[in-house]
Length: 115
Image (cartoon, rainbow, N blue to C red; front, top):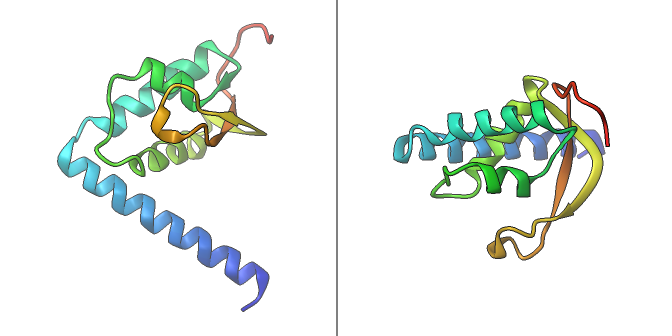
């Protein structure tokens, strides 16, 4: 299998997994995805960068399965609310994440001064 084919296959599998997690979450908690997405949008308007810590501190909704977050972040990227900055930092607000490195996203809707 060629390197590009393997990468495309991996992205396809990721997208299927996120879709399954999002569908399952919608059945269990229909308002989660919209509440989480609106939190990302609100943060992106008020800050030049958005990180998972920011979202967890500002969003009361929590999914039953953490993989449901993936579809929310991908929607924000797809709809040009945020983009990857190329940087990451550990999650410090959720001990279950074991300080895993998470992307720092650049806001595409922030209009204030940059830090």
